[in-house]
Amino acid sequence: MADDADAPPAVPGERQPHTRALRASPPGTARTPLDRRRVLAAGLEFIDQHGLEALTMRRMGAHLGVEGMALYRHVTGREDLLDGVVDLVVDELYGDPEVYLAPQHGWEDYLQRLAHGVRRIALAHPAVFPLIASRPPAAPWVRPPLRSLRWLESFLDALTSHGFSDGAAVAAYRAYTSFLLGHLLLEVSQRGVPISPLDDPEGAPEAGERSLAAYPLVRRLAPLLSEDESATEFEDSLENLLERLQRVRRESRPPGATL
Amino acid sequence: MADDADAPPAVPGERQPHTRALRASPPGTARTPLDRRRVLAAGLEFIDQHGLEALTMRRMGAHLGVEGMALYRHVTGREDLLDGVVDLVVDELYGDPEVYLAPQHGWEDYLQRLAHGVRRIALAHPAVFPLIASRPPAAPWVRPPLRSLRWLESFLDALTSHGFSDGAAVAAYRAYTSFLLGHLLLEVSQRGVPISPLDDPEGAPEAGERSLAAYPLVRRLAPLLSEDESATEFEDSLENLLERLQRVRRESRPPGATL
DNA sequence: CCCCTGTGCTTACGTCGTAAACACCACGCT
DNA sequence: AGCGTGGTGTTTACGACGTAAGCACAGGGG
Image 1 (cartoon, rainbow over the protein chains, first blue to last red):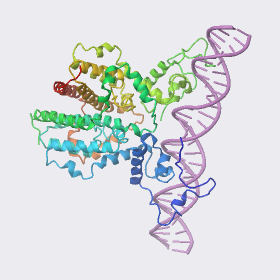
Image 2: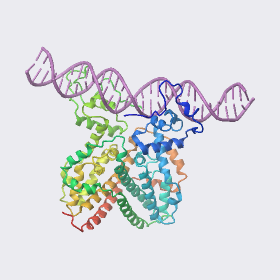
Image 3: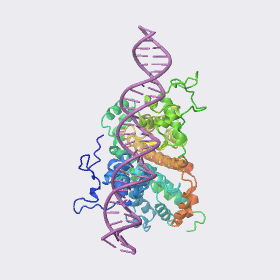
Image 4: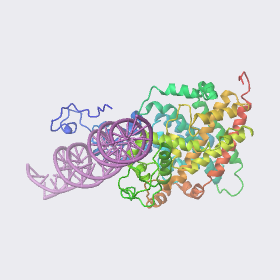
């Protein structure tokens, strides 16, 4: 593949082609030194643009106008960079935490807004979302995509302070994360195909057509299957989940829930 | 990494007797030549044992008592090998297709047995299941973990032949796959931690304890969160999904569904 | 007998993640 | 002013990876 990563003007042989940006670059264009935040932000941007598999330490360096090894000053390695990108995306939802922490509108409203918030960031960063799902969480019982203790605490708080017993709140957490993960992973991967680093634009349709001959029902329903009902499906499933949780809540009142 | 994968000299008591083109091997012990099936099976075994990230072409060769490049005679590359392993696992459920194809017990029974079958193979190969979820499917509307056109056809057949309209069957497919993927991915990753290539046996608990101080609810509910309720949670969610699909089915009878 | 075809081995290239040593700049101290 | 000093980016280097190309050797039909 044609790799134009080395942007510098240069012809081979020039002695100091690399340091010019820092030292003797055109007036006013002094580069502010890297820091962890900038590296992470660049990583997020890079993944959004080129996909996860294309992310390489050297390419990340080039993306920042820097030499690759420079990243190790701010990040302990590739894994750490990926973790940092995940945290970055996860923290996007905390833009104004009030929105998600405020329980004044009831737990159902909270779960609704939280779900839509998570869906929004999933769709904003489709190539990162699988990473959120697959990276080992802080503790084994922290479940993606609600990957942070802050979110977990906020979630449990919203439910237990609105009539859920401890056990019911935990059960709700499990059901809620399963729903979000399953739905959003599939929605994102359905749209996310074009971002793949390898494009195989032809051949696929033909093969699909051919093999479809053996599956009459699939062929008949193909138009229906191709439709994108993700949004309404999300709403329906979420609403159904909430109804189910209402039932769970009601049936979870027996002993001393101490709150 | 204490990896003993490199065993250049004779591997004592290795699985397959090996001679054939091996110049310095003892006489008489003929190794049956590799073929695609064996390579794929070895790949599955390897991933089950050492995890996905540990799978390397050279290591796979060593695992088969062979030199790594030999695999390329039977597999076009690493990606192809991975795809083959996924197909292998997916096909495990077809041991006796009758079980899943037979509609004589009704669609609910079918969905029940299919779900439990998928869960069984997910738990049998926890390290492979994320692969099933993340590998691009044959067509964009084929959703993991029901990754094959055969399964899709069988699924649609079971529903449409039991009173589901086309649209309701497709909606059911979407809801069903979302549920399976979300639940099983989380269940598998929860158990699958020990298989990780990097073990970080210390530090984690302490850090967990320390950061937990800021999250009182999480700390209070930690014992509950640590419990493994996957099985009953799976049953409950599945039952709830089936009830919901019954409703969908009933309400999907209106116009000319041409069947 | 030889040659053909299929199988595994050897060598080689380019890229990856990353350790280590180096070069340079902006500073505070004396 | 000179001079360490520490932080930042560069260079070099190593081992492992995926894989292209060519070699070596087996068994089976002329």
